[in-house]
Length: 324
Image (cartoon, rainbow, N blue to C red; front, side, top):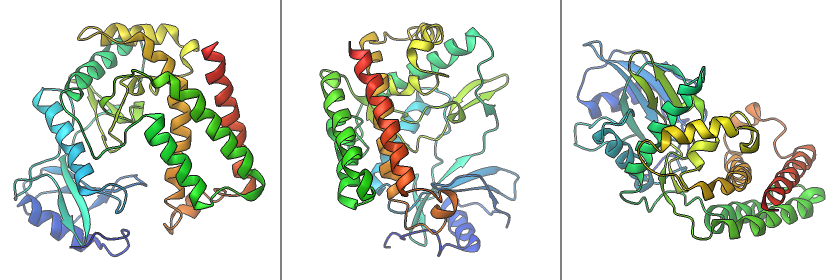
């Protein structure tokens, strides 16, 4: 079956029928939507009372092989007894189903509250979890996922924005001159940097704190091949130079299981710049979504791109300052 171009043709009844057939369980006719813009996420319940989460992947974002790369990584983490929510095996033995041309996966419902640091031990706790996850991540590759290296992902994002004509004429030269300066500045910093499977989007909302059980990593949707430090810096409340105590505690927990390459801390500000440009490229790919303009009404205006130029220039200054 051809993959759908969007979610508009997928009705709740069709979704329920497709998931019910895939899991081989009778489901109640209620589907509670969860807040998710990128994918469609619903909470379902079987007639035996089991709570399930179905994630319908946004068509066109990831190919089937990339989704399976994600599933393999999470399943390997689960097999290593890491606290993750792994996709369920479907009736056909796989983890990826399809309904009306839309790919989906089903997960057991897990409760918890978003991770919040209330004391020093919390930094050590999350450091230990990330270290164990990275120990699994380095065991094999993920050839269909984003490679978080400036010569790969950053260069691709810049060329996508350039070729698509998204930047307004008045800001175009300034934007791409700054973006190219970022690329030129960060490329040497990635020489001899080890890349491996990582979570890729490890902020506090993607970590559940389960009282009595500990921390749990969720939502590997942006899983990538990149430097392990990517999964650390997004948890910090500020830039590394302003969070030395927090980073020390995080690494103290991390090194319970393996050594951390302290030299990779120099990549934090480059990675922040890469994330800024990645997000702009990602947004540009959503412009055909009828819901996008309602959520981001100012995207693409001259004022919008002027702000992006200013933000990139400030970030470039941070990168250059850190290299002195």
